[in-house]
Length: 308
Ligand code: ZN
Image (cartoon, rainbow, N blue to C red; front, side, top):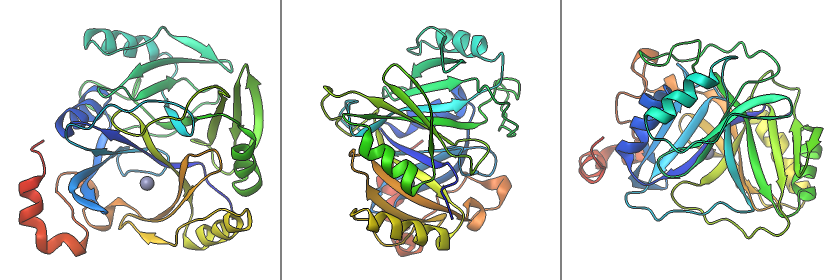
């Protein structure tokens, strides 16, 4: 009855084609679903992950054409941490250099080497070599083979003015434990799952709130086995005096959203039914999939969506 690490991370992009090219060609992820924002069907919703879109590997985007640039700050997730194989960082540094991608020098944190870089909208991504071997099987492409490919999430970083209320949700409700601290960074982990079980809290008491637009995070979704676990955790969230939504059907999972006290939008997303519910595994991401309430407007929606 606990959270099983991260499910997906959702961010905002400004250009659909540029977003697809970066995550599939440059980073070598698989596009596992091409659909629309269920609350705004004139906007795409892209999902990128491993072969089947396993929870804990999925990054999703709402590309808003011409969206203003957002600003990182407190009350939001400010970095997406991916797990990559031992020895792969020089490959990535050389690849980013060749492609003129903004990056920082390889560094080390909590005894793990990592490289930070930005996607075309300025979203901060970190490739981290985990101290514990990651056995997940990555998606491979012609340019990104399994010796360097992304295995899935390592962690996310939440920037907060005061970490205490957020830490309390993660420990009391989600089952995370404080693992260690380096400077103003506090590392929490759940042992309910092998990978994607880390959340770093960055204490920035003087930093103003962020502004959610292109290049920033929209929400962080945590993984629950099924709706039964989801509803049990929802009760605990209510008992904390917070205000979760009811269960919402997102076709590929069921969702409950709530704003945690530090200001970050959290989601609880189920493992079921998954991305093969409306496309076979070998065709994932190749068709524009619409939820049934929008199927009758397909022609109109397809006319509005940018060509990718
Ligand atoms: Zn979500």
